[in-house]
Image (cartoon, rainbow, N blue to C red):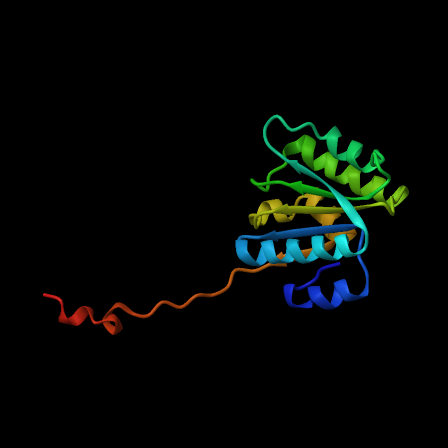
Length: 161
């Protein structure tokens, strides 16, 4: 389900979904969206948080394991998957598709998953793993904000010799 940033508060007031994806190059707005989702999860009793940050040595089995493992104290858990490059690679793309399939077959009401990555290029947006996430998750693709800069002549540059 595609969701705009300005509709996030209304969505979270109703219920918490099992899977969220936040993608944007607007770092402040992306962080605000992530903070709102985590705050709602905490208010709904998700006290534990497991952060998984994808790098070259990341083992994708850790994502599936995080969803299957029980908390030591029986707490509900936030699984926070961060893909800083926005490129999980072939194995990662398949692992994300498998993860969505696992969530669909065996939903775990004690977990909420939040996946974040920067804005993807056009080719990556058309990949199978992104399409699968868009279909299964509450998907926030936050666009860049247009910023206007005053023209140089309006800054008083005409007075410089």
